[in-house]
Length: 178
Image (cartoon, rainbow, N blue to C red; front, side, top):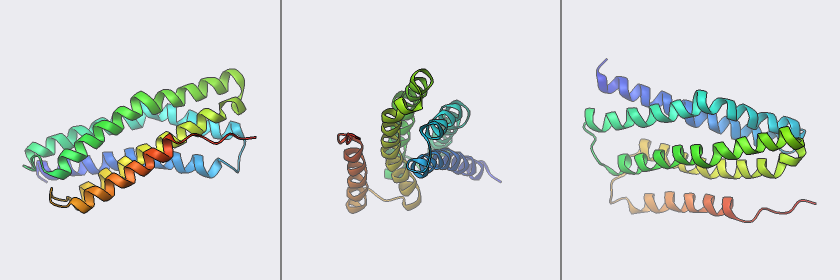
């Protein structure tokens, strides 16, 4: 096995663990949203905060590092899928560390201090933020598979529209629950 193949393998496995792990947490939260107690829902976010330094952060760094190494070792250079993929990975890793992680920790802290029901608005916010983040992550995966050229304007427009809709859905005012 040559170095390029090894780096591709490491890059894909790290991305699968990062994206798949987070997506599993989102799906668990969605499925439990109406079928469980606030304590159970808070337990999913608590598990996410435990997984962040053990899974999400290391795999995001490994995905980024192996991807950058492939730019040079595989000779891919600065093609659209590498430039936009790199920008997306930097965004989503930063967004996770700066926004989603602290939001999860805040929800857990509120649940610990005031009870799980008091944390529910914060949990809903966490899931909305994570959904937007995963729109970006799925766009990155799409770019890595399709590898469009700069002339593929329709692809970039479609991906941009999906990310914009996810951002608007995330940023819209949350409905008040009675």
